[in-house]
Amino acid sequence: MSRIEIICGDSLLEMKKISDDSVDLIIADPPYNLGKGYGNLSDCQSFTDYLEFTRQWITESKRVLRQSGTIYIFVGFRMISYVYQILEQELKMNFVNWICWHYTQGIGKTKGFSPRHDDILMFTKSPNNYYFNLDSVRVPQKYYRSINNMRGANPGDVWEFSHVHYCNENRQQHPTQKPEGLIERMILASSDYNGNVLDPFAGSGTTPRVCQQTGRHCTGIEINPQYVAIINQRLKNTFTGFDSIDPRMERVPGDLNDPQLRAAYLENHVNWFLGNHQNQESHFWSDVAKKYKLPIANRSSQSNKKTTPQTLLNLDK
Image 1 (cartoon, rainbow, N blue to C red):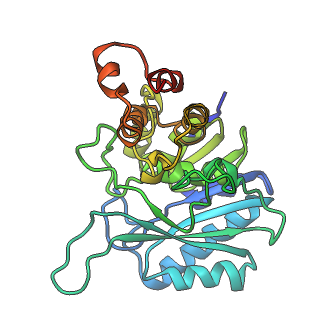
Image 2: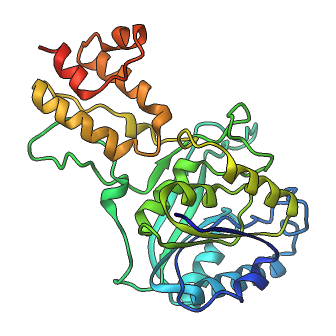
């Protein structure tokens, strides 16, 4: 069972209490210093103070990471070059990826182009000996081909996840809540089951919630007691599937024309790509029915029986 600990306190002080080389993965979404209202002054520092604050918490992060550990940092574009320099030049950490999180809605601008992405830096403590499980985060292939790895393709370094919109039932009272599907990819790729994950700026509690549902242990640190209360309540909520998904996860490969082959693949698809997204399964099966002209959508809606690969197989005979 996952061990989730939420600490109300200053991340710099609380991280000093964590043992050296004890954390497998750090996911950090620090304040961007843009003056947002987090209930404290952490996002309204001078440039010099903010840079020193950043240097200190990243230094602590390197100390607590295992040699096989990874850190993902959400970085505002004004500071990304400075953060990169701290990680690579000052702390001699290993650069792996500069990830672009692309979203379709955001702030509108009338002069200049409206921003539609966030930047995420992925660094490891070791240049070679770091944990990375590609199979856990693959995305479905576009077409069935015997030469393809039907377990899926590498998702690449441009990730598309929708914001958690205010109409979403999982939306919390936090200005920069991150989508669960986005954090899920980091956790599945860079930590193992029962691994130790640290979130030094827990905010609305997305990382602890994803760890809870994926069998990882997590320590979340949050300075604002109101957000701590939100996190603790969120951890008690019934789980019906993560609040966001990469659209490619629902992609139904083309050319799966053999009924036996299609049925076997579809069962695997659900297990491989929709394991934490039960709330998306009905949409996936509907797409299968349309793509392969199977009448399962109507039959499924007229009965309470769950649509399965065997249903597909029987209908296609």
